[in-house]
Each structure stands twice: as structure tokens, then as C-alpha cells.
Image 1 (cartoon, rainbow, N blue to C red):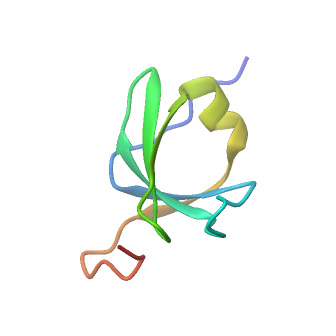
Image 2: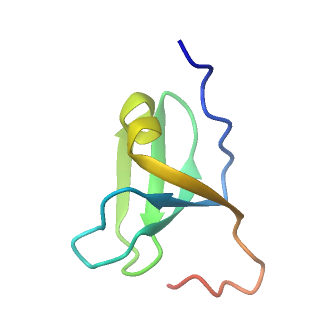
Image 3: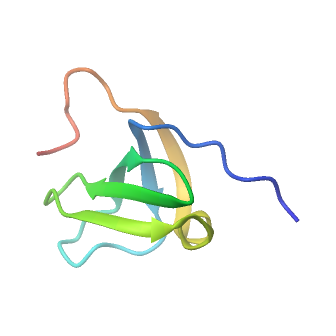
Length: 72
């Protein structure tokens, strides 16, 4: 069994499958047994169980920059 993925609020992650809007990048808005993420292309918010999130995340891109160049 793998240890839980170390994820923090404000981290930008790339998911394996695209959102229907075409975006792959999301920002983490909530951490716990459920993970809250917001699409950086369209702004849609989604809650996922941690197990599903860890399976669907492809890569952690790091903290969101202060300039906010990642979308809405």
C-alpha cells in the first residue's frame, strides 16, 4: 500500500483525462478525505474522493504562481 499523496491547497495538478472544456490543469481548493479541485480553463469546481483523485492525477505541477497565469 502506498502512502497518501502529499498535496496542499493551491497546488496545480495535471489530470490524466481532460475536462469536457478541454482543460487538463486544476488547482487544489480543499484537502481531506475528499479533494476539492477547480478547473483552470473554465473555473468549474469538483469534489473527488481522495482515492479517485490519487488514481486520476498525472502530475503535480507545483504551487499556483501569485500572478495567476493559469486561468480564471
